[in-house]
Length: 372
Image (tube, rainbow, N blue to C red; front, side, top):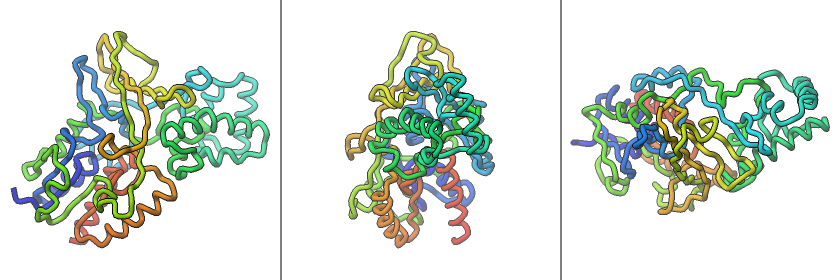
């Protein structure tokens, strides 16, 4: 095959750009992935119990973008699953993000009524208030509530997940789980939500199933980088691409410990967070996503840890000021390269959800077709 485009990585970012180049432009594309499978961290599979396992933690698709929704639905049908997250606060299982239902779960009803009235005097109904903004209260009762939410939901959970306090991370992280002045228990209020009926791996397999796309697994960029390519799309870590010339960007990694239990369900929800208890951050139970039937169930306890090259995987860029400044140095070098494009969580050093990764690839393709 005479390669014209090289795509490094077969997650949603790489698969989307590869599909568009091959389908819309009719160009040849080589997709490589150092993993032994396609789909990146969205990889899923059915185990011996018939349960669809998300190998790298729960992935729930949601988007506001009709463009993204229409694009991805070419390759899969979705169920109507709407994700909700529970958390254990002082031994009480309740809703996260913190909302009015949480308020009534964790406090006596008379005090909850008082707090709800005061909240609605200050904020609009259905407002989403970032926790660091929520802490700026003058009223004593609301100060108490803000400190309770900060400690019980954000502080220790953030330390476990990120290795730093909420005040040390970028606002984009703390705003992902706001205080939600509503009784809507959904984790996201996006218009389009669901789980692919045949899984994420099958979805990406279909995206890459074109005669002018070749996929090579167990293949790193170093194996092919001296080839003659028209364009290179790199979804790996931008600092690794430049051989860490300015130093390493920081990432968090995650370790999932799977357990099989001889029961229909282990917990009452797909995801239960443990902000203050235990050394794991949350427990995933995969049967809930596609309503899989089995007399057994599989859970995954999620442990956050520092990324160490050669030991574990990069999962989440750590958005601190120091890392942002370091990324800018690599970004400036990237701008000087001819027909080399960086995208995805690692390439853009950005905390993308799946829909944002797809949208980034769609928009990048539009830019390319306008300029070429």
